[in-house]
Length: 600
Ligand SMILES: *Cc1c(COP(=O)(O)O)cnc(C)c1O
Image (tube, rainbow, N blue to C red; front, side):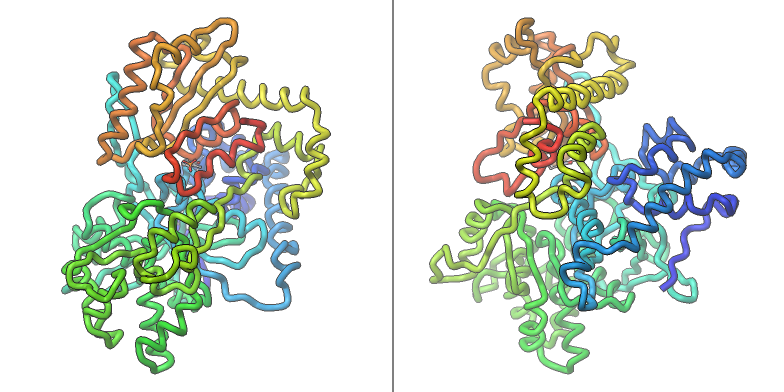
């Protein structure tokens, strides 16, 4: 299949064609070989957006023409392009381990992807984990392709008013400014997927983002062929009510599966990252029934073994549930095509056979249709076995077939330049790729002075960045101390994470923060869901504490926590605060990110 990019810069000089190739490969979000190049094209835009594709769409033709005769620029362009080509051709961990066989890529379904702030299709941990999975698969050469939604607004953007009230904004994701391109068929037509909705056919447009070796396919409903209401289905991430969520999940699961089929890539293994994507199970069964001319039960048994469900929720209220009436309205058609009764279809989302009253639970559907189920930490595996017990009546809890695979992070995408240098010298370039046992000794040989040097530089850069962000509000030299112990709390403001536990004894905290003998300071960031009023009250409590105790130079609350901010914080904070209520943090990944930078 041929992917023709948007021709938004038909005037891009031939000599600079490689700029487009580099800009469209999101590998720049974790591999920094081309940073200097983009900084050279537009320093201000680079600092502000870290979005090469946007820079390329914005830069003037005059400037581009100037570069065509600039030897040093052309060299800057050549090196990362060579590096990219070499990397894509090189052997990988996967080709060494499993090279003999050709693999149909595993399909990875997720409601959100946090790859870069330049592609704002995420809200928090789940999305950032999915982003790190794609990056890691690219690095290791694991054959995978991902499916998600292209949101017109994505998750809300946060600002705070003077009293600490959270304000929510929904800026438009202009698809010409984010690094995605339409998927086109061989004869150049924009690939569309159609999905039967009650009384209408929904048209979905297919997009593709390139994440190194991995393709991330995205669907959006903002097609003029759809009704105005339907065009908004892929508007907000985690916005709207139950019906909107159901529509989104049908687009993700059913639309996503159809998209892979349309690309000729019917997967052998589908990974459902959270229950949002569980409708793909039904579409997969339907497709199998047609192809093999068989009945529902046989098709479910045959395809089930190839579905894998990762659950991320430690409380039952966290599962998406829909009323049977809503399911009947939207999925009645699937029941008849699967040749089962509505009661049988509803039973797929229920814990037992009495389906009349129970809401349709997406996690139950995912379990009924998956051959392997896992939680995201050892403790969460245990919690999940308890949550899923109703599906396994009379089973001993410890035998409920739910395992765990602890979440992880792509270490090399969270390290600072200084930490990369330090660990490369100590443990070599390929240190994170193979078993870690052998590098333990090498790590211990790093001197305390070198570690401290790395920590101090990381912190100083964070404080400089914060001062720059706040330059308009406060005289910079007043704000934080580049050489003081810096505590950080950056995560979603949800009550179970206890973002205000530090405020339990306000006098004492104020005393600690104003001590001149042992200076300590605090950086905070995090959004509360627009409907989570308790979470928002906790933000307000912090802002009021800062005012009440006049701590403006010792505490900053950074608005609008996102991936770019996370990268500065993960590098610069000395002590990362993590105070969730046990066992409600299913895993938690930010604490894993900071370690490589010598943070506690
Ligand atoms: C890692 C990360 C998260 C998740 O952090 P937790 O520790 O799991 O709460 C959320 N948001 C961003 C931007 C992140 O980078």
